Image (cartoon, rainbow, N blue to C red):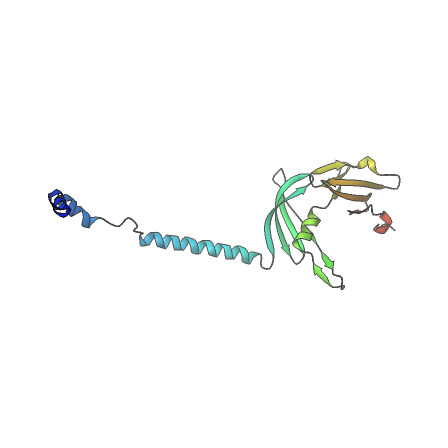
Length: 198
């Protein structure tokens, strides 16, 4: 007997039941995706794109981003809008009050032409030291995560010299009481170089 005959005898006796044969034609494919779901999905994608274009149109020509910066020694989340070398930041303090402040400017190229400050230069400006005169008469310096009172560090001429360190970087800060301040990464700037007093 050859193998073919053996297989025919063995499997020739097997038959599918009538219920199984009726069930097979009524089965649906498993990957059926209803038209209603497709319509809802398309509408959601369209809504998402239209909302994104409205947000972009609100700030045409500028850049808007959420940043982390140091305000009075505390790291704070803020929304920063940049346009033409100017920035505006909006943030909330610990009490939930909204504050807004801005800055910016221009830089001069070697050929004498001016250009708006870049985003990196604006961030450098935001991370610069800040001097604050509080209502209680104290004077404070804020630099990144540092906050220090300097009220009694002024000399008899109303000048205060501070070295501010951030890792390997050192800033030399010169403050003239109620008349401004200047800083450099090279050396102290003398008040007569920038002072506005008569």
